[in-house]
Amino acid sequence: MDSHWNYNFPDGLSIQAFASPSAARDDNETLAQNIEDYGIAGRIWEAAYDLQQYFRPPDYLEMDPPCSFCSVTSGERKTVIELGSGTGVGGLSAARVLQPEDLLVLTDLAAVLPLLEINLRRDMARRAEAEKSAGEVWIRALPWGDTHVAEAVRLELRECGRNVTQILCSDLVYFPALLAPLLRSLIEITSWSAGVEVIISCRLRDPIKETPFWSAFGVWFEFTPVLAKDLRKGPGSRWTEAGLAIA
Image (cartoon, rainbow, N blue to C red; front, side, top):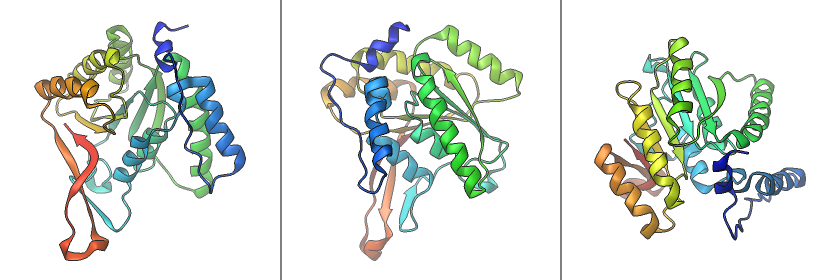
């Protein structure tokens, strides 16, 4: 078993699944089972929904800056890597706005990949049923800070003529022991190609533990918060932070 796996089952783990009242009973039971099987990685975290909303905002919501790869007219073939994909909810929402020639790489610890495979198959079935195209999706193991595994992913992308264009992160800033490896992975992957954009979605839970990461992140990256405006509030509506940052 991967030595990193225990991070998904910290001492005293006690988290609840997001049980939707509108979801079928079997769906909510599956969410609870995922937590039992995969720990932290098996829960759908709040920032994943923020990421979904950023990729496909409702008509009444304006985002600044807007998602860089959601425009059909952007003209650049995209290669997007998500770190710490977990259930894949955030990353797979990106796949739905990518073009068929684009690539999304969902990554996590090796022990979590079966969950990603299951959810990818479900997502592909839904898209096929709705006759909707999307970008190609790979699933790969990529422990944070592991340069050897990261290099294997880089070489695989290079063999396909791919350059990373965006990195996605959703609710990854939590365990202090994992913040340095996460930052190392971000630094390494952004060095693979020029102009790689980092999109981070997060919920601030413990400033004392999380502030050191953002301080270190700011040394290596220039980043700006994503702002949102609710147009339903009329001319007087104000911009507020949307829980995302772009670097």
